[in-house]
Length: 285
Image (cartoon, rainbow, N blue to C red; front, side, top):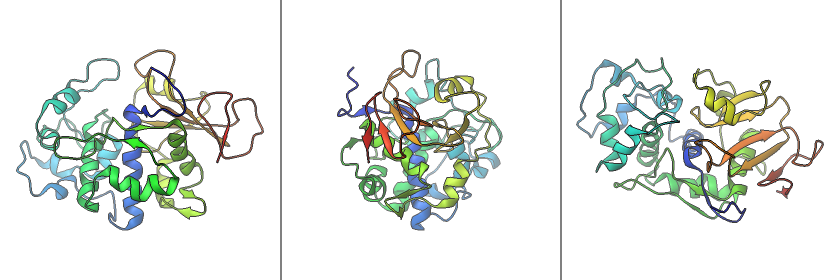
């Protein structure tokens, strides 16, 4: 598989970060006033199975945090049984919502690509358009992102947890947006409260693998741009975004990772704003 800068790359589960970012855009637009809303409030038109007090208690924050408590098997180093079963079902949203609850919402992190897919469906309910179209209007468009591919489920809901394909440079623009506190060319795209929240993540993921893949150094401060499993490694004085399109080994071999670094590819002291897709290439905004 080629990893050229002008080829769209499947960013796999980093799609979750984009879905989370669109949630922030909806908050800024006033379409969503809080992530404390109950999840099932958005699906009152559905007849659901396994509804109990714990399922009724799930909030949007829980699905963003991967702490919904939904019964889900998707290990990072083995067969993702639940995600596969979801893809084989005729109605992905029903498949997710009908699952039982095994832990109280907010208590335990469990990696689950169904959570962000629910968030994508909610974005469609709030905006009247798919997450892909909403991104075009409110995120990709303002960032100058013009080419991407975002597949959808049988009902037309953009897949919230994986599948988005973007250019490396465009992936880096999203990281730069967070680096600049949600502003792009002087215009606020994300609410400051969201930037503060994701830079003070409190959920214990209990997954050393992610720390290995996404951290730069043990002293780095780790943040999550979607309060989920895709992390940004954010050192104390970030000055550059690097978009990595491959890794040497492991399950995330073809995943596009995004890290914020303290120096440019060829050494320290480079100005803020350089985007790098492959050392020592430097791209100026």
